[in-house]
Length: 318
Image (cartoon, rainbow, N blue to C red; front, side, top):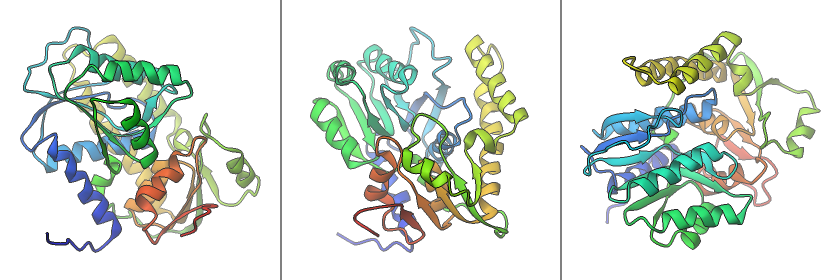
C-alpha cells in the first residue's frame, strides 16, 4: 500500500475525515439533524466543517433540523441517511440533545443513522445504560468518537453499533488564513461554564493577556440575534428558510472569531475549539484541560504532533 506523505499534521487530520465516506458515500441523500442554534462558537465551527465536508464530497442534504424544530412522526425516505451533528454533548450533561439522539435511533430502526464525531461523558451509569438499551436495538447505527476513551466506552456498551475513531469535523476547514498580522501578545480564551477547572482559576489569577470566551466574543446585538433565531425555530419556521438564514449569519459569527484570533500571537485556551481554531490557523496555542478530561484526551489522540500546540501540564510532555 502506498504511504501518503502530508506536508502538515493538519493535512492528515483533515484526510482522516474521509473515512466517514465509508458509511456516507459521495452522492448520498441525507437529513442533517441537531445542528446548533446557539452562540457556542465551537459548535458553529463543527457545523461549518460538517457543511464543508458535505459540499466537498457531493453529499446532498435534503433537510436540516435542530433540536428545536425536529417534528414528531416525520416521514423520511428509507434510502436517506440520518446524520447527527458531532461535538461534545453526548451523555447526560446536555439532556435535550441526548434525548433527540435517542429518539432518532428509536424512531427510525430501518434507516442508517450516523453520529458524527463526539466526545462521550456520563455522570450517571444508569443514564449510560438507558442509552445503550436504545442503541443496541438498532441494526445500522454508526458512531464516530473523537478520542480513545470515548471509543473504549462506546465499544463496551454499544454491542450492535459500529464505533469509529475520528477527528472533529472542524478539521475539514483546514487551512484558515489569518485576516491580519497579530498586534497583541496573548489571548486567554477560557471557559466560563460548568466545564471550568480549578487550574484555570489559578491561571486567571495571574491576570496576563486579554480574556474572552464565546459569550464575550459576541456582543449584545449578536446575542440578541441568536436568541431571535432560537425563538423562531421553536415557534416553527413556516415558509421562512430559517436554516439558510442561520447558515449565513453563522458565517459572520465564525469570521468574527477568526478575525479576533488573528489579532494575537499566542492563544491560551480551555475551549477545545479555541485550540482547534488556533490549529486551523497554525497559530501557537496552549491547551488547558476541561473538567472531565475532554481536551487532554483529544490532544493526545490527534493534535499532540502539531508543533504550534502544547498541552499545559501534560505529564507525558510534547
